[in-house]
Each structure stands twice: as structure tokens, then as C-alpha cells.
Image (cartoon, rainbow, N blue to C red; front, side, top):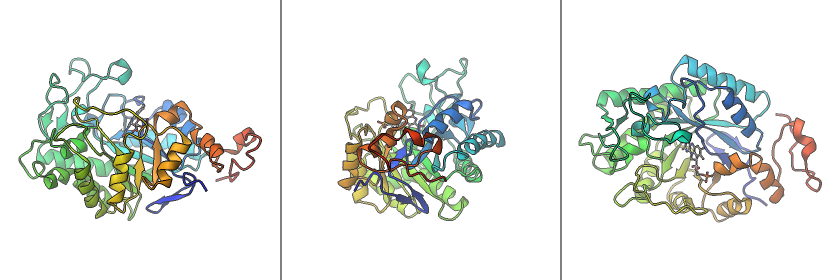
Length: 367
Ligand SMILES: Cc1cc2nc3c(=O)[nH]c(=O)nc-3n(C[C@H](O)[C@H](O)[C@H](O)COP(=O)(O)O)c2cc1C
């Protein structure tokens, strides 16, 4: 029997199968507010049959946006715009929806990726960025401002406030973004964190702020609400953040009732050398899974149903996330279900599309 299509629980939330749609920035918001693009994009993915749909990196404050078109959840206006999108989708799809809460740190103030993605000058619509230490991503970039203790207290509260807003609009799970060289990852990595206070230096000190953010969210949302984290398991740079430190971080998160660890990598340093091949991050997921009781999500160039199934069968991860593969083929879970002889949820309007020979592809339940 296919593992990929077995239900799985993250905390109190039961997913119909083990396919997770990874967060994907759309750079299509207006002043942080979701637009019709989000309705079309997320609506489309909400018909994919996946077990969980993750909303893109969503900024907890305006300076924490990667670009000026990032989605945000920092005000009544941004909450209302996202609520409207969710309400529309919920009329037609019962797929659980999570959101990734993020602060871009020194990688904020960037141009849209399809216009180059470079750090924007203030004159060209950019803004002052913030970071654990005044070290830029590229040597030639403007330096970020070092965050004071008061700033950290404020940003922690921004994460909490956004998490409360997410709960308020009926989001099913929250993923804290602590990967890809954004603010929380910048605290973890010794390459970007050169602080001499209690938030820098030793591993314990570098983990302090991300753990404080996680704990503050945990304490301020309903008891046992599905809450997990995304990490970069390694910087792919010598003397940077690595798997053994990720395992220590995971163990600390275990104490905070973390429901899942989404294991990505890289994004902190332009010096990274990443082997772009199938399963290139699965070994990290596997190492972390061996050392923790928290469910682990593997991601990164997993594109084939047999490949996904094998990762689960071999006990290397609990869940499989896809990003590019599901943009390319938004019915990937349907096709995987055909391949692995399993069933998916689909809207009744589409039931007649079931291929002959696969009479039980659609579960035919109206949820
Ligand atoms: C268009 C696009 C947007 C992305 N935005 C995010 C994001 O908002 N947050 C995040 O953690 N990763 C983001 N990623 C990374 C993906 O979630 C994923 O980890 C990565 O693409 C590797 O998985 P894949 O090989 O299945 O694409 C993005 C990737 C793509 C292609």
C-alpha cells in the first residue's frame, strides 16, 4: 500500500496524505494585501489533492518583506485581504491550509526576482534592512542595521501578532520561516551572527532568538495549535550552520511542542555550493528524523511519485513537500495517485475527468 497516500497528523491536524505544497512567494501582493492573483493561484492548488497547502512567506512587518510585493499579515487590512481569499477557497476546497510567517532580515528590500532580485537602493524604492549583525549578504550590498534588544522584542511580538491573525482567519497550521538566509536563520548561522550579547557567539546564544520567537507564538495561540518550522539544515559553507547544529536546534524545538520540521537548506551565503540533484536535501531530513520525535518534511527536487514513495518507505521523512513540481503540474497529486493506485479529494465538478481504469481515483466525498 502506498505510504504517500496514508493520512498523517501534525499535532491535532490530520492530513489526507503526505503531500505538502511548499511555500512559494508570488510577489503579487499590494502593500502586503493578498490580491486576485492569490485567489487564482491558491485556489488552483487547493484542487490539487495534496494533504496540505502552505501559503508563501508572509511578512510579519513591512521591513521584513523580501520585496515590496510580498504578502503580509501585520494589519487589519492585510488580515482582511487574506481572509477574503481564504473564504472564497474554503467554499470549494476542504484542503488544510498553513501559512509561513517570515521576516527577511538583511535579504529584504529586494527587487522582484523577474526583474533581477538585487538589493534596491533607497532611491529606487528600497528600505533600510535589519539583521543580527551589520554584515551584508553580498560584500557590495548596503549594510543592514544591527537589531537592538528593543527591536528584537518588537519583532518577536510581530511574529506573535501575525500568528494570532492567522488563527483568527482560520488558517489550519503555521510554519515559522527559519531558513534560506532570512532573519531567524541569520541568527542561527555563525556566518551572519557576530553578536557579542546573549543572542550571539555560542550555539545556545545563536538559537536563542529563533527559539524565543517560536515559544512566544506557541504561548499565544490556542493550546496545541499545529505549529512547525522550516530550517536550512546547512549553509553549504565551511564553518557555517550545519546538520549537527540543526539537530541541536531540533531537540530544543521538541521541548516547545513543535509539530513538524521542514528541512530545506542554503540561502544564507553567496559562497554556497549546492549539488542540484534529485533528493539533494533528503539526507538532512533523514539525519534530523533519526535524532528527533518531531515529524520531518523532506523537500527539494522531489518530482516523481516513485521517488517520493521510496523516501517514505525507507523512513527518511514523514512528509514530502513539492514546490516547482507542483507549479509545473498542479494536478501532481492526482497523477501520483493514479501511479500509486490511491485516491485523492477532488471537487465534484471535476469528477467526470477520472481516467478509465481508475474508477476510485476520486474519493467522491463532499467536504
Ligand atoms: C517560485 C518559488 C517561490 C518560493 N518561495 C518560497 C517561500 O516563500 N518560502 C520558502 O521557504 N521557500 C520558498 N521557495 C523554495 C521552495 O519552497 C522549495 O523549498 C524549493 O523550491 C525546493 O523544492 P522543489 O525542488 O520542489 O522546488 C520558493 C521556490 C519557488 C520555486
